[in-house]
Image (cartoon, rainbow, N blue to C red):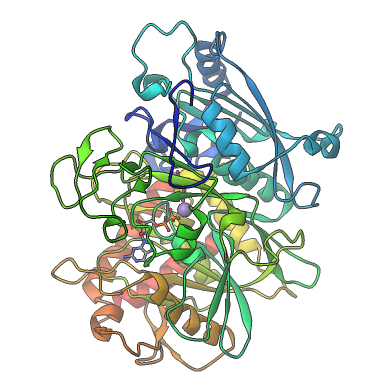
Length: 564
Ligand SMILES: Nc1nc2c(ncn2[C@@H]2O[C@H](COP(=O)(O)OP(=O)(O)O)[C@@H](O)[C@H]2O)c(=O)[nH]1
Ligand SMILES: C=C(OP(=O)(O)O)C(=O)O
Ligand SMILES: [Mn+2]
């Protein structure tokens, strides 16, 4: 606060606002690299040497040069912090310890919210292995240029590098959460993904939640959606159907393994939420709003004159005439075009999990929670129905590999291009994607209860660009259908692309829904889509495509080609 990095919001206890340099607001996928001796441990054998979109390789020599160019003296004149942290409850057999060195006080504060930071870590660690995390904003003092918003960073020199063999992460030049809170995407997905591959478990970009139906039966789901596509919201929905209860275990990352009874168990390695602020309000996500009443850090949101936070979506929850200061420090009035939007589209809240009123009593259980269903999804404005169910595990892995989504503000891509994002893991892979797919396929073993796999799309639009599905709390209706499918109810019918709900089998009472439009599977759309997916997989994964996945592709493509 003395330096001006943080600013107290007087409306809520112990809550602060932070504005970054506007050049440092999102993950930088193009500068996110994975280092390995063998190039193909990281990248696939892409066709004709096409640039890899699924993990970017850096050689040990180039890695060394990149570090030598950046790190010596990089923290000169700054405080270096040593952060011991645990991903997962301290001391639990499934947890993993990391130590992050950083020169950013923002990172220290956010790590204390997002992970378990404690002196006990040293005792539990003893002489065992830990993940080494090194972070610097890349601005040694004296700084001979103007630091914007008291937010030191070095956008030209950003690199987020991973050394899975050495269990190490090195991040330079950015303070944005996804690039700097190294326990999260870097460790818990890219490094843990590789550890999981070696040890036979899974580290996935998934929320974890439970649904209890009016009969009192509870089932747990995990769901993988690309960044800014609805994980945090689904993880804590307020169901609109009476008699249903949802509880949250995690909103971003799941570590999963089959136990000795063949049941897939999931833990949330995190301790807080780093959520997208815009769109969050008491209608869409009352449980997130409840979590934001104290002890939070808000990054790149706007501020109201009475010391509260504001972002797009809160228009109905603050005084319409109140003066607002935007994330860029400009004056703003609700409804005005001037200085709109008030908040960066990737502005974020950092909140402790314990603030969320619907955390599951077992959310810190070291044994994890038993998973019945795996859900994939993305932003698909066209062609993709509300829900598809995979025919079996293999087909489910293919459904996951097929995931595409409109680009969002969570990374540097411009516009709304539809991008491939298999398993919502494109930016978070720490090793060869062909091996990753094979690892998924290898999960299926005799004696294991394989979860059902689904694909959802909350974002299909009509001709007027309006969402066909109301989403948010109404998504309980789709979860209810999935629960009944897990119990084997006869409410699904086959199509070329997978099982879909029989007409009327999703409870849409009280909604004004165009079922035909919401569930249609347009043959022309799917024909071109699956051919494009084949081209993508052939180009990006090439000979690393597992044979079983290739035969799934052949099988589904032949069916789609035969559609009328
Ligand atoms: N239309 C619609 N928007 C949603 C839904 N769920 C989330 N969103 C919006 O999508 C954005 C990102 O959501 P979030 O849950 O933070 O995504 P995450 O980054 O995957 O955790 C927010 O602006 C939400 O308001 C939904 O069911 N329908
Ligand atoms: C932290 C991030 O997470 P999410 O998947 O919630 O967008 C991010 O992408 O920067
Ligand atoms: Mn999220």
